[in-house]
Image (cartoon, rainbow, N blue to C red; front, side, top):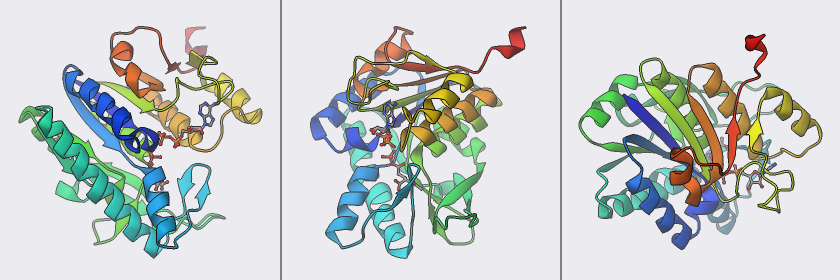
Length: 266
Ligand SMILES: Nc1ncnc2c1ncn2[C@@H]1O[C@H](COP(=O)(O)OP(=O)(O)O)[C@@H](O)[C@H]1O
Ligand SMILES: CC(=O)N[C@@H](CCC(=O)OP(=O)(O)O)C(=O)O
């Protein structure tokens, strides 16, 4: 079957009007679809209000025990359940899930190599059969950034990595497209200027843009995950503004398309 993995960024979730606009588009999005979300900005704000300061390294959160409790409450509780309720109101039969539910996503605590990320999980296995069963039953999974190690430990996993891993594991048997929706018009030359979209990025262009620091922080995991997905058989990866999701699905130009280098053509 054809499956679309749609990831929504924390900066959209944080603004009720933008979120409602996006969810209305998601509801109209044709075919089988899975919504993936984190909510990094909200987790940082809740943490700060409790005296737990956020610490990010290259777009990934250092997650100590207190931080793990906060992200679990914010992603798996507050945000996930609100998204499900809003989608149900739009007649989408959404079902909210962490990676622990139905053993959807098993991960392993990231080994310490220079940086100790704490309770951060690297994805090991996706329960593809469960997703197939849910989609076949007409349910639309809404998956958040909390995974587990199947030994009783919850772990915090970057939501872009979850979207990419879901897309990759489903691509073995299905036609999969991956959409990263956030609050900017795409990958930009000047991140403050929505008119400076880079329409296409391949590995060579990415390496150059990282060297020049045009791409940094949260855009790094997004692009690393985009390339990982393409390498493993995902059809199409798009990064762009949440409100342009339907245009992107119709192949209309908006946002950034990610492509592999074309060296295999020569
Ligand atoms: N070249 C770039 N174009 C657009 N955004 C960029 C770029 N480089 C870094 N960024 C940063 O990446 C952020 C998106 O990553 P992140 O905050 O993790 O995404 P999300 O909104 O999906 O949660 C942007 O808000 C911006 O600050
Ligand atoms: C390990 C790690 O970095 N986890 C992320 C998960 C949430 C996320 O990715 O949220 P956005 O999509 O809003 O950025 C974090 O806690 O920020």
